[in-house]
Length: 324
Image (tube, one colour):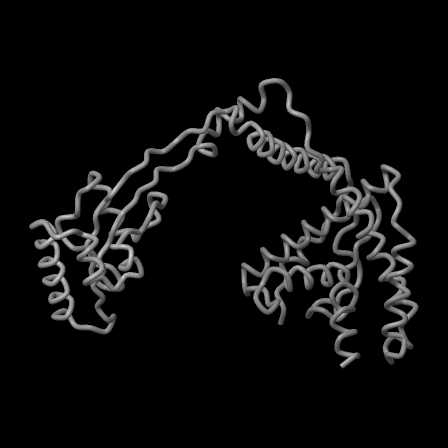
């Protein structure tokens, strides 16, 4: 069991045998400012990406697989560019933490046969990986640092994105559901519609909707007289919502609505119009949203600049290769 757990941890970012390509190909997938990134390192990275992205870690096939490989290559290049930028800024890996991590691995897996034969090489690769991780942990917040908005910028953002500060229309409706099993024939559905029409007629003759709901409805709201409470417009079943859209508060739909579970009588009880929140009441949220979007734009612009300023030579043909 220890050997299995070791391989699971180790292969996440070091193991060279991760794909049909990693043993067959030697050389560099990409050369960044003269520094090569090997095919094996790329396959390791793509393997980890697949484990995080796809169910059971298995990427799609065909053209989708090629697109996944291109995306993984772009992510790896961005990772390398951020590490280069961290070093350019004089950032240093947390060697004390890294030494502790490596010592923990050596202690935990030191008796493994593979560790005893390849331990030095494994430690070197682990150290390189942890050093990059340490630098990335430092540089990412710097590259994503939210700028301070100039006077009027947040209010302009509020006006330009007013829908983000608008509480949607809410409705309060009541329903009576007569269930029809999904496997029923058309005669059962016709019978349910006839029963619903009879209940609707009794309501129009003066029977309280709530009383009829408690007596006939199979919906969970029956105990509350069919009252569904307030909800955002559009959250109802599409057919029920369409019926509600035609109603004024206090009105019941003329005809029962057919849904997956059966047939429904619906009444609109109340409608609350959409509400636009005043800027002063949402200033803090608007500032946070502005800063988040500005931060993402600045981060994307920085990565684009780093790519423009860097000599990147990518073996695009390799990424087009499908496994046998």
